[in-house]
Each structure stands twice: as C-alpha cells, then as structure tokens.
Image (cartoon, rainbow, N blue to C red; front, side):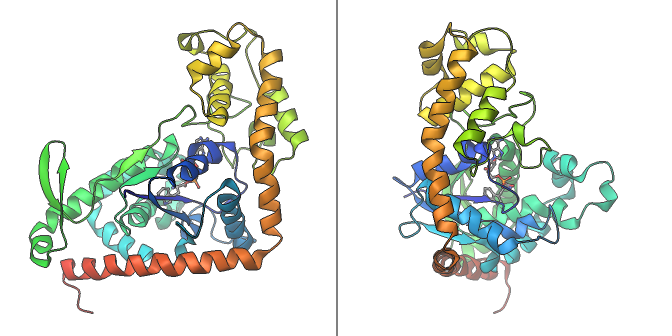
Length: 350
Ligand code: TYM
C-alpha cells in the first residue's frame, strides 16, 4: 500500500482552506493507503516561540482530524515532538540542503518580512524539517494545499542529493530500493514524494479578496470560515463574501479574471465532491443571490457535524491525549527503523 504522510500546524484556528486543501483529502485517502497524520508542534515554534496554550492547540487539531473522519486505529495520528527522529533527521537534512535552495523558498521570504536578519534560524530551516517529517517514514504521497508545493519540490531535491551522495553506502548496507526518476533507474534510500494537490480547491482564497489566500493570520475574521464557526457565522460570512456584479457563467472559461467567483465555485465543488464544471452546469446563468444561499446550506451541512464532533471531543482531553500517545508510540517504532538505517548509511556508531 502507498504510504501517505501529512502535517498541520497547531497555530490558530483551522479554517476552510485547511479543511478543503488538506484534511478532507486526508480522510478520503484512508481507503486505499497506509496514512500517517501529524500535528506538527515543532513547526509551530517558527511562527511564535511562546504559545499561550500549546497543549490545547495540539488537541484541537487532533480533534479536527478525528471529527472529520480520520480513524486513528487503522492509521496513525500523533504529534511531531513526541518522536525524536523528526529533529534528528532534520539535522542531517540541514547538512544535505544547500543555502541556495533555502534562499529560493517563497514562504520564508513572505514570513520573514522585511527584516530578514531578525528571522529565526528555525524559520529558515523549516522546509528541511518538513522534508524530515515525510522521509522519516519514507512516505511516497503527501496531500497538501497548493502553498506547500515548493516545499515538496525541495523534499525531492533533498532526497535525491542524499541518495546520490550516499549511493555507495546505501548499496553496501542493503537498505536501498530501486526507483525510477524520470526514466532513469536509481538505487535509492529515500523515495521521491508525490504531492497530492489536485481537486477543485487546492488554494482557497480569502472571502474578502479573491487574490489573497485564506489564512489563519488575516486580520479580518470575515475573510475565512473557521472550522469552529457556527451556522450563523458561516451564513454571515458567505453572504458578505465579495463578488462581482455578474451572474455565474455556464462554462469554466467564464471564471477567468473573476477570482472571487472562481473561489466560491471551487469551494462549492470541493464541499460537494464535484468538479467546478459540474457546479457551473447546475448554477450557470444564476445570480449570486441564488448561489450564495445554496453555498451556505451546503457548507453548514458539511461543516456543522464536524464542528459539533470537535466540540464534543475537546470536552474530553484525556481521550485525545490517549489517541496521541498511542499514535506517537506507533510512529516512533517506525521512525526508529529509519533512523537506525540512516545511522548505518552515514556511519554513525550506536
Ligand atoms: P499549515 O499548518 O499552514 O496548513 C495545513 C494544510 O492546510 C493547507 N492550506 C490550504 N489549502 C488550501 N487553501 C488554503 N487557503 C490553505 N491554507 C492552508 C496547507 O497547504 C497544508 O496542507 N508546512 C505545513 C505543515 C507540514 C507538513 C509537513 C505538511 C509540516 N510538515 C509534512 C505535509 C508534510 C504547513 O505549514 O501547513
């Protein structure tokens, strides 16, 4: 079975972008894959060193995973800091990755802001830890939103350089696997990960500005639908969502140059498990005064059971902690195998 890995940071409230770009896909992938889903608490230090309530933030992401339908018994749900292999492998990858590669990361440039000298070394090295998260389990498929694409390309570059630099050692230890890169056969230790970004809403945009990503850090709460929003809030935010004066087009091409319309159609399609073309064949020619109420109904129908279940789960932190403890132990057992082999490949005595 293919091995799927993905992570979500315990920072702020989860929103519709996180759900449609990531968590909804995590749920669907369980049927045919072996899945590992991680609350990446160590990554959260790069945004903010001191967190008011890290334990409950971590529990809240875990609750969202479970409420959305992830099965922590068939698959693995855990928090990153409980498995030391993430930090160990990240150090090795810091030595594999080149400064030039890191300098090209657009997310670092955005997050570091103007005064780059004051950004933490952790924020800079973030993509190397992300590569370690995935490759610690030698995962092959990674469901993420479009904003993580460049980080997954870097993950492939890191894996490739490790495989080539240690090629003789990999052969000698016998831990390698035969893969093809392009059309070339390569004897590798780490696989080349495939990003799973497709679907109708790979990048959910702000409800206030169709050219900006929906994000936890947007000052306006009207810009996003939070997973914990109630019916009334969802309805208000969609009713107030920015649109243009035209009705909905009947063809996909009619969405070009209309970012707000495109975004709402994408959200509808993702929530309904349809394509954008299907949504347009249903609503083409209609006004937003018809489409928006339909979108409210659909969003409430899909999200409110998740919201209710999240609240129920959050009332019993002991249960969530037990899920994480069990998941962390199982993740650690797998990670230990990789780290032992990596030590052998590099030549570290243990
Ligand atoms: P994070 O915590 O910022 O976001 C979690 C997931 O939500 C997706 N996402 C979106 N998708 C569509 N539209 C949006 N507006 C939107 N906003 C967020 C993100 O793409 C992500 O899939 N670096 C990662 C966490 C991470 C990770 C990993 C992911 C750490 N290690 C290993 C995969 C594999 C991040 O900061 O996601």
